[in-house]
Image 1 (tube, each protein chain N blue to C red):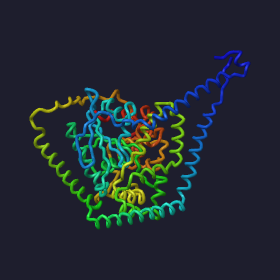
Image 2: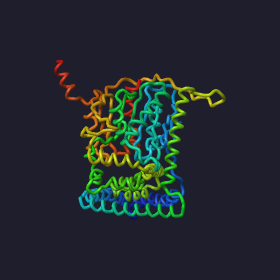
Image 3: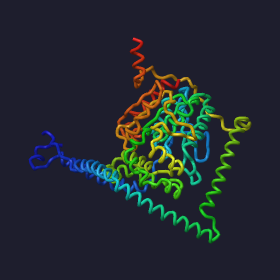
Image 4: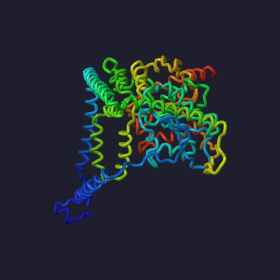
Length: 363
Length: 141
């Protein structure tokens, strides 16, 4: 409250208010800081579901509908091989899966699981020519429909595109991809770090088998080496803010929750995609079959993130020009690689755009 | 009396953190993109892998000498178990297709929703116009 007496004594009420607020926040930081270290990790992946198919570590989840009426064509989410899928189902109110289920889609998700040592021999052929077709067949049985849509995130989008190119007579009706790399010459730092003159992928795989999660985590962290420290400073600054802290904990948990990458798959993607860029050149083969993206003619949507430091636009933009679909669209959305699908603004950007695009094509 | 606009010292610190993060990331990325970094990290990886391989070999010999199962022994059993699991899943699938469910008390299945939902009003979707389609449209005119 401003008073003439206060001003005349040099007492600035606005400054006093700010000091009081910062003192309050400093106390809260201390209290909530202790709570932070004592409390459990936040619960993630809570949208109700059931497992309808298992194979090795793979689980095919079917999410429970929340309405009496759904779109005819079921939607299958295909996740990347390099991270856990709960980024798509982070928390109530911050879950792409929950959003799609509430929007009336019949949602399934392929969870690849955590590769075991005996999975080191898995290659892209296993995922594209075996696991995905088997899962789609199971989805068709479960839903009673002969057509499905796929939404693939990052490497999940790559697997989905490879599947679409090699199964033109399959049940796939619509394909949505998010931040999917196609032209690996555009992969920035990853391209430089896997230079075959210095990066002996054969030795890595032959010695380690599966690529350990620590190595995967280090490679992603090295893309923005100062961001972890800056993130911790921001966390401390906002420790008084429960919403900020919850969101930070969820994202941080996911970022650190890396999984091993099957060794042979790593060898194959590094040599044939990352180093030789065979897919973009039209020379990539799976089990001897040439992968021609020009054979993809179904409706396709590719959403790319404007500030994606993991899959830069230079790597992602080749997808739409390479497919032969008449109904194709590239959408550039504000955000980064992860915030595109799971950030606080995803509910205003990607999610409604995906809903609108799929709704028209899922009747 | 009008409120004075007070400079927030913490805001200045926040801006410093943002700026420093950007500058450090940019500078470190530039350094990590150099040939020298590539050579150095390649050598470090080689040294690590050499050490790892020696340790694996030494551990293998030690365990064998003590007549204890090695990691490879356990892995080979795990691989056989995985094969058995896959065959069981295959048998389960075939049985389910022949005899979908056994009679008897069980939980009632969840009601399946109707698959009749329609899109909420047709919207014009932006399409990336290909040169071929544009040329076709011109030719028709």
